[in-house]
Image (tube, rainbow, N blue to C red; front, side, top):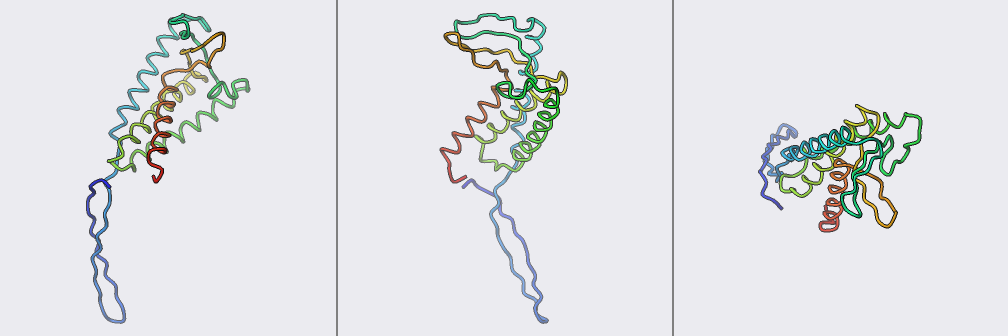
Length: 185
């Protein structure tokens, strides 16, 4: 266990005219990993800069082959991961916006309450938070998420994604590693 600060509390109990006092010592681990919000901010800034650059440089679905298995291409996704609910009539914009807001608040509170010794989880949460906010900005501003990273092999294409999606994926993968390494958490 990481070094923690000691919290002293004094309890006074009144029983049938008698006063009894006791002092309890509790170990409380320092919390607050909001210092990792800079990483969330970095993900958001990189995400938005790359989306603006691609949107200003490409026509919809235009492709630029970078390697035999990787293209840059401009795509708009009004749905969620893998274009889930993309063909709906627009209600999904606000549904996914609401989910992103709730997730962002939950992740920020989690970061705030996270023990300072748990740096790995701080990084995980910050990456996921940055990705959630990056895609949230797109949903609110445009009604869709801008995607542009396209991997493919032998004629099969993985759904296009962006820097925000990468932050979410890397953060979630790191969380899975943490759960495997530390199942008692």
